[in-house]
Image: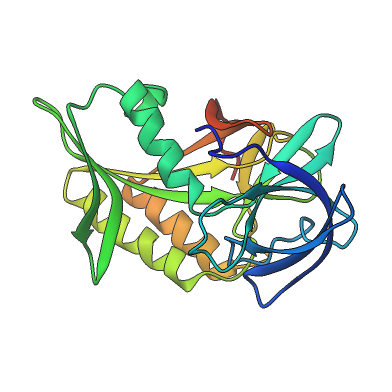
Length: 234
């Protein structure tokens, strides 16, 4: 997915109230940007970090900029917009760019299932079981080259795993798809020390037949696209 407007580079001054960030732009202006990320953003929200913002020409928006990327050094980037993975996955499904989920005739978003939940995508096709796909954004990296999820406690995430386990038990496909929004990772794992309850729910879901799939992303200041499959190491 290409960014609508060319991104501008700046330096993060502070992130606060979860959804706001003050940034010093290269032209000397200090602006407040929307941060589309309710998570902890461990390692990505330190003052002095180089960031990329997308300007908005919409006068109805309260803020004229949205924070999109963190520059990691060495030519690497991380995407911080947690609303982006679902759009990336939809684009990739339409293009057949996720081999584990290719070949389905129908892709339906936001289908009700479980207890007051909506699955991100329901894939259907003749002669094969439906595939229920839940998408999670990943941008935590600590030691080594593994991306990790979650970066904070997520009771909602554990609930999704339990609901997917029921889908798998019914004989349909249940898939947890982790989209790694950073380009410096070679695999995926769980941050069980951050949320032991999520790690336990993941183990139970895998035992019930839930599939775990991880994909890298290709990121630069022009666009973000789904990349290659990554090994899941848990």
